[in-house]
Amino acid sequence: MTFTHVVLYRAMNLGHRGSPVRDVLERALVDGGGAAVRSFQTNGTVLLDVGPGGGAAEAVVRAAAPLLAERCGYSGAALVRPLDDVTAAIDGDPFALTRDGRTYRETLTFVDGGHPLPLDLPWTDERDLLDLVAARPGVVLGVVRGGPGTWADPNSLVERLTGGVATTRTLGTVRRLLAAAARA
Image (tube, rainbow, N blue to C red; front, side, top):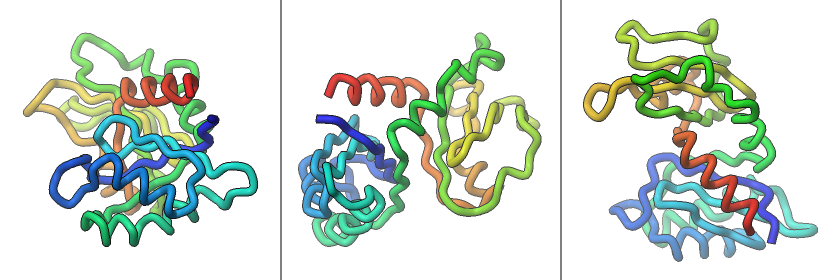
């Protein structure tokens, strides 16, 4: 099986109130027209294949949306990316120049809609807790400094600056996702 797309649900936490359990999420995407679906971790990240002659991945996700609302009450946004685009977003270790001993998380904030970032990159917030490293089509790469309780939120910043809808994953999550896709 070859996965071709990644679906990134916003504010989904499998098994929690208002979010599906894994089987419900995967079944909704299959019922929406997905040929192969694999939920990855519990944060609403899904590998998707529409199969030969299948429709667009976005159409599958749109068809699954009312099913998720009906079956578990989830009505959040879903961002769809070709797997190759996710791979390209981290090609060449774009975090290398900003990584240091204070790095808490390296993040990819996927964004749909809105406007381009109104900042010159790289950019650091006034508290020195967040660096926005690079912007690539549909994704902003960031480095979060500090740790629990003292960190900045790249997701809300990107949404505020662009007016788009965003969802964030860590670099570790994305690397594990890509490894799982390669093994499939």
